Image 1 (tube, rainbow, N blue to C red):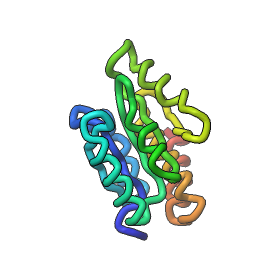
Image 2 (image 1 turned 45 degrees about the horizontal axis):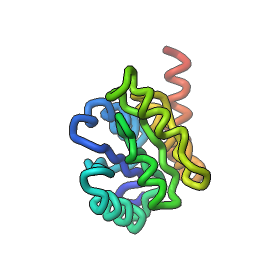
Image 3 (image 1 turned 90 degrees about the vertical axis):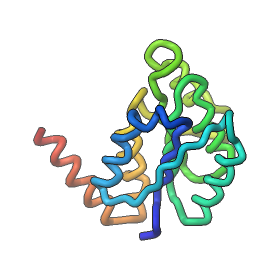
Length: 152
């Protein structure tokens, strides 16, 4: 596999704890990833550079977590043709509903696959399912994870 197949972007350091299940699940599935902190509002050029570097490195999926206005996943989706999975983070309006609406109401042509509010683990599993189309080892680990969940 390449150095990393998934880029995990968070808008601020304070989002790291909520996105940690994504990192844990990607590691469990044996999926190499890199996590970066970059704000679409405070430093859009940094986001552009990170996405370009990820594309050049052969990344196949991007997970972007954001709260409040949740611009990061949509901005990233506007920069690339890679699949972007958005994780609405529960900050801002009660329960993170503003972030959820921001991600699910992207304009035509700029899709963001969106998981539940604070659904970082599901974002990693969805990334694994996408990667599993081309990487049989990831698909096998997902099957094992599914069996374990069924037994729990």
